[in-house]
Length: 327
Length: 226
Image (cartoon, rainbow over all chains, first blue to last red; front, side, top):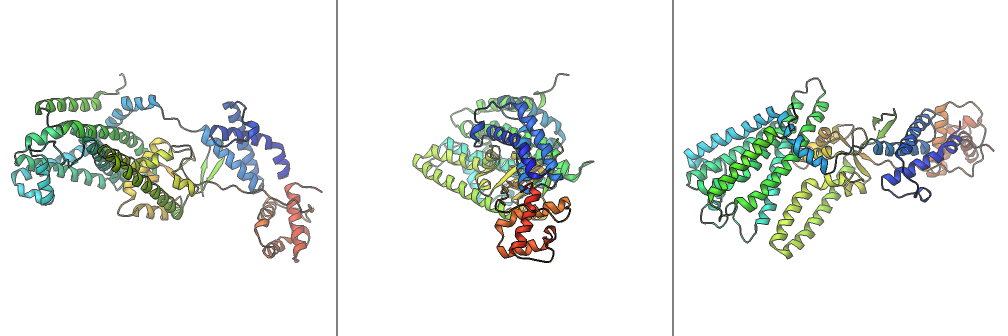
């Protein structure tokens, strides 16, 4: 069969398929098909025909413009037919109710390692700095130490970072940018054989520990702990979880098992991606609490500690119990 | 060229985009973000406190989720990539999924190291499928949108019966020559046609007449009969 004959025989089908695909994919449409009903079965049938025609055209070395036209429509049809649907509120609800906590439980070993990597330096450095406050200078500069001391001194109107003519909203924006950035670094560092995640977790742990030890030694414990208690339930957990997601992908690269390293990596990102959705949501909550609740000085510390205890219980309970399948 | 096989047994040819086009796309996106942030900053400074707050949130959103939002749109690419004719797809040619898009864009933080997207550049240069680290982890691919191949215009040429039997690859070569004919200079076309002159029984000769006869054979192969 000559190319022209081939084209004449089938071009009506092709034109119909192209028009249907354009309509469904929301591109500009050929007028003659603008009002026809789009039927999925028709698209699928035409798509399979076009696949056959493409195979024939390639085997018979038909001219490039015919092969190209068929390639184009089969690629579009393939995209349309095998597209994955994963949006909508039902999906978000399922993500929060089941997928996120169960993904965390599946990766519990990494969560444990990440927690240890964060907590151990925090405790060790914290105690060291509490014992000998001058050691704080080996972690941060003297200016930073002084500014932290000023921030948490009971004399300021609102705790946390010094508020010069700004509002809670500005701090909300600042916390979002800063904290989520830290969490994403903890995750992305995992791509370097987990070392980056371990480093960022350990560094942030050491930094937090140093601050806590220093401020406690300075006698600013009441303002400091009542400030951090509530939002840390979300913030520290989220940072540890994103570090755990990073460790997961790093471990997949180091020890891929029976898969190739690349397959292992792609597989590892499936749970990691779900954890990152959840982490982002948690950090948004944390930033909100940090900006509007933690910094309020008119609330009695007792109330803050009570709410903090509830938040910690809720977060830990969520990851322990939420979304378990009925046995 | 990377091939992806569909369940129908068809190989889709995906053409990965290399460093230069991706760099230009990135630079364009960067300029767009800069322009948006700058104009938002002006607006924010007029509004004051709450404006600054929204500016910071906007900064955060643009920093991390600008590519995600555009990659999940029907176009499958950020404005910069769209201008350069690039698109982000999964390894199998399907539209990029939300999880993959989030993964590849958050791993920019790793690609960025040690400075100026160093790891991304090395990875793109070394790999034949031009993936950066984020693409590797997410299983995604940045490719050139296929360009439309023009039809063959040979209306003025009368078909000529070939002087010898033509194997399929000979036919394909002749048709490809005919397709390129309008974009070649006359002299170059004559040179190329002289190489194929045996098909019209003019072996060893060259010139516009021979070229017309060789193109005539291509016309005949395409299916035109006088």
